Image (cartoon, rainbow, N blue to C red; front, side, top):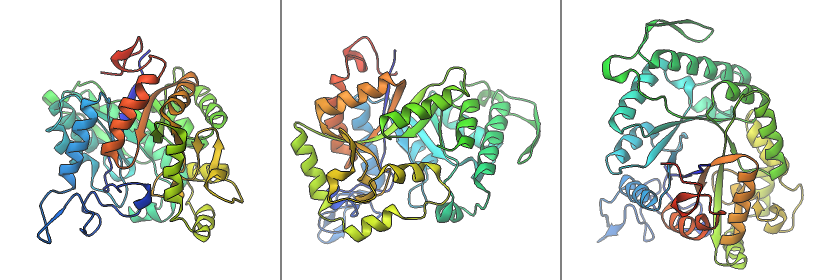
Length: 384
């Protein structure tokens, strides 16, 4: 059995720790200051070492540590992952790029050509993170007013067309959202291996679409029994489903050290902000609603957000991103990951802030403890 371990690339910069989670000191998404690394200041002026330089360093380190590849997220407040993947590909040799994108904003024939060009140039190092969008203001930022279930119907058609033209065509399609006549890819772009599809979404419409199109059904971390139920729903709609989980990890030598990091970050969280966050309008995203539903309705401190041993549901209150993460010693985090493998997970997208140092901690402290099931360390190998 092969377990693929991906490491997220921080596309909007990085904080130096949870204590500075809203200060992106690594990257030019915040004004340069004394604590900035990318760019730093020399003589009071930026030194020219930009975010892309930092992303290159992070990708090279992750590659050297044996990670399968990296997720390049896409939000209104990030660089474009297609462009960044092309730049990082020139600086790495085996590292794969999981490009997050919303199909509604690309023509599927053009997306096929873009992907095939990058796939060919990188010797097949492209994968898809298909995200259909969670509604609300972020969706309107893209100019998208399509209703929730219709967005998943559009995504499904998009992938039908993209696959249809991939091998060269001619391909005809007359659907609700797309019409193609004689579509296809030219010459050497045609016939390449199709990229792996990691499909996200927690609603019934998303799970239905994932059953048709996904190589991996991708979920945020949730309480383990909730994940088990979600995976069972996917299994009902797919003949041979595979599962991936996106997880933030905070692991240290001892659990006390790990939770001390959480405590330091929590000092900057105000109770009124927590309550506002828990009652926020998440658009029509089922995933956001599920995450909020697992959080406590009342709390006295950060440990109230530990919904089961080592599973912390308060990260979204401390920094942008998913609510859930794994917190504990290296041994405890490895045990939690092993339990997820037992649930059927065969790919992880791990992350930690800052991404550069935490890649070392996870690769050297956690992965060797995964029941000899990851990397060259045992009978289960890290994906090549």
